[in-house]
Image (tube, rainbow, N blue to C red):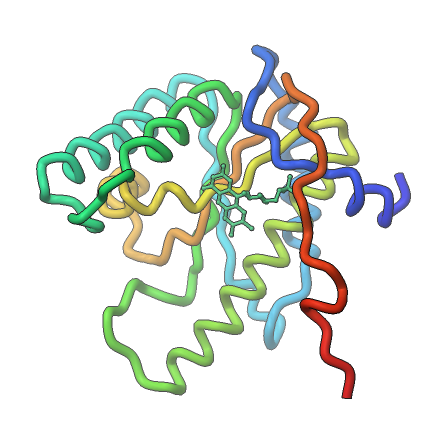
Amino acid sequence: METIAAIENRRSIRRFIDKEIDKNIIEKIMEAGILAPSGKNAQPWKYIVVTGENKTEMLKAMKEGIENEKSGNGIFMRHRQLNIPAEYTVKIMEEAPITIFVINTVEKMKLTQTMEEKLGEMANIQSIGASIQNMMLAAFDYGIGSLWICDIYFAYRELSKWLNTDQQIIAAISFGYANEKPSARPRKRMEEVVEWR
Ligand SMILES: Cc1cc2nc3c(=O)[nH]c(=O)nc-3n(C[C@H](O)[C@H](O)[C@H](O)COP(=O)(O)O)c2cc1C
């Protein structure tokens, strides 16, 4: 597939059919992630692939996150509408045969940091974003749908514990064969986002 066609036609997929993805395709998708550019070639990513029965434990951690939010022991505390996207996210991750958690291997969760640390973190997170996008485009090329998910943060502590990591959990990506054909989401016009100098 032409790269531009993949960029233009990829959609976020939130409904998946009940069909496993071959392990070698998953590895090819992660190979594409590994080929992403990264600041200082640091390659600050790790992929934790969750499939099969391990999904149950993943979903349990997510649901614990929801319960802790609801009981006021969560991260967001004043979570007026939290349970709606959170429960929707759990449903998507339940349906997807595979979810990959992308970990930032060089950054821990820090609540205060120096400007220098913040700037380093910004570069590492961009690198990880490039890796995620590479994986999603590669997946699309293999006929597999994907969803980039940050609505896991309500269960950040529960997932950290379950994944057994103190490194930053940047995002999850769910993969599967699409059971929907979403139309293109709107984009801002060129004039809105470009400034020529
Ligand atoms: C950093 C990031 C986080 C996202 N988190 C979520 C999420 O938690 N749940 C979700 O349904 N979609 C999530 N998305 C998908 C966006 O909603 C989607 O990319 C956007 O609406 C444009 O649609 P498209 O991907 O089909 O072009 C996320 C996308 C990005 C880049």
